[in-house]
Length: 235
Image 1 (tube, rainbow, N blue to C red):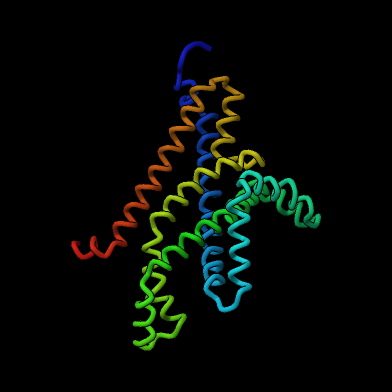
Image 2 (cartoon, rainbow, N blue to C red; image 1 turned 120 degrees about the vertical axis):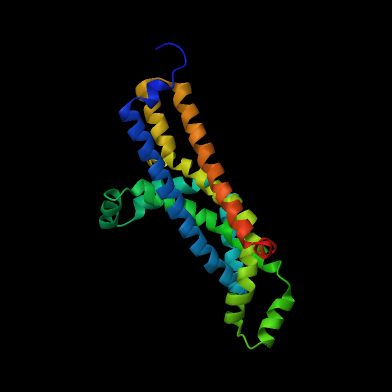
């Protein structure tokens, strides 16, 4: 083995197949955890604005925990801790259905939900209270006003931080390698062990993460532009 040679990786069918599988699993984990995170974020937001102190206190504690405990530690707690406490039948089922990817999705989704909920809350609070008053004056109930008037504006205001955190979530999918999830970083490490082409394979992995992150940012920028009323008016 001499010199820098990307073709040693890119012309090897086995290595290419491993990379493609890693990319596929990366998106499975990223998309699965994004859906879980956004679903939980909406529920947390509803609790934030519910009457009574319990809901607000619960969400504040949830957000504080997930913001102050490293994501890597949370993943390890789920896989090496909680996984071992489950009933045997559930453990066997998870083990036969890619438990590593499932717990990566759960850990990342629960963590990211804290950030998404705060993004949505900030976006909603930036909407003028007069919008709610106007909606109620037009005959909307509270839920209807939130659904058709407040939330669309709040989500539009929250798009920039939501997009940034979505990119962070995609990149954090690489943490799944610690619990054995067969995503892109796992594939890169396996290829490095087989080929001894350390620089070449880590360069390829870096460029792949950069490409997909920029692609997500570009998609987010397009969505933000389409959601901007001024842009729609010019169109």
